[in-house]
Amino acid sequence: MRQQHGLMLPELMQLNFGAISAAPSLVNSLEVAGPVVVRRITFRAQGGNQNVMQFRPTWNVTPRGYETDTPLLGPFGTTTYLHSPVSRAFTLRFEHVVTAPRFHFRLAVQNPTAPLKRAFSSWLIERARDMPRQGTITVNPFFEDALAASTRVTLVSSTCIPYAFAIDEIVIIFGAGAQGNVRVSFWAEDNDGAPTSAEPDGRPLLGGFGSVRWIAGDNTVIRLRPSDLQADMIVPERGMFLKVHAHNTDASAAHDVNAVVTLRQLVDYEG
Image (spheres, rainbow, N blue to C red):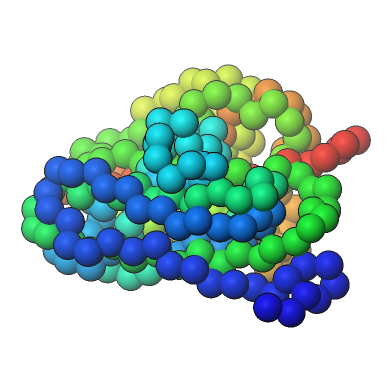
C-alpha cells in the first residue's frame, strides 16, 4: 500500500456472516494494525424482512469481551443498533479515529425474527502515523418500531450534546408501504421534552435546505449533506438535545421511524 500526503491509500475490508437464524446475536471480528481512520461502513442484509436486522459496529484491543468494546456509534441516539433499510445497502460516512497500534474491528448482528438471513459489511479505512486534530464525529441512530396510524412521536437524544456542533449528514430510511405518509423532521432544543401532539418548539435543522420542514418517502434511503448545498447547519449552543419528530399521517397502518444523524464537533468554536 502506497503512502500519499501522510495518509495511506484507502483500504477496504469485509466483515460478513453466513446464515443467521431468528433470535441469536452473532459477533464477527477482524484484526487491524492501527492507527486508522474509519471513513465509511456499508451494511447489507439478505433474506426476507431485512428491516428488522440490527448492526452494531465497535472496536476492541482483544477479539473477545464484547461488553468492553468501544462503539463506533455516537452517544446521543435512541438505540445502540443500526437497522438495515429494507433490501438495499446502507452506507454511513465516518471520520472515526482509532489510535491503538493493533486492535479488532467487531460487528454484532441480530436477527430478531424468521426467516434465515445473511449480513454483509464493508469498511473503508485509511492508515496513518500522525492523525490531524479534528472535531469528534458521532453517528447517532434513532429508531422506533411501528409508529401507530395517525400518531406522532418525538425521539430525543439520550443525553444533551455538550459541545457546539454542525450537522454532517442526515439519513432517513423509509420502508416499503410508507408511501409518503411518514413525515420526519429534525430539531435542536435546550430540553428533553418529547411532544406527541405537535412538533418540538426548538430550532428546525432542515432550514439550510430551503423552505422544507419535513422529509417523506417510500422504500428509499434519503441523504441530506449540508456540504453538498453549502448549507449552514451549525448549532453553536452547548447542552442542546437532538430530536427526531415523526408524524404518521396514514390512517390505516403503522410504520417504522428510522433515521441516522451524524454530528461533527466544532473544536474551539467561538460563535
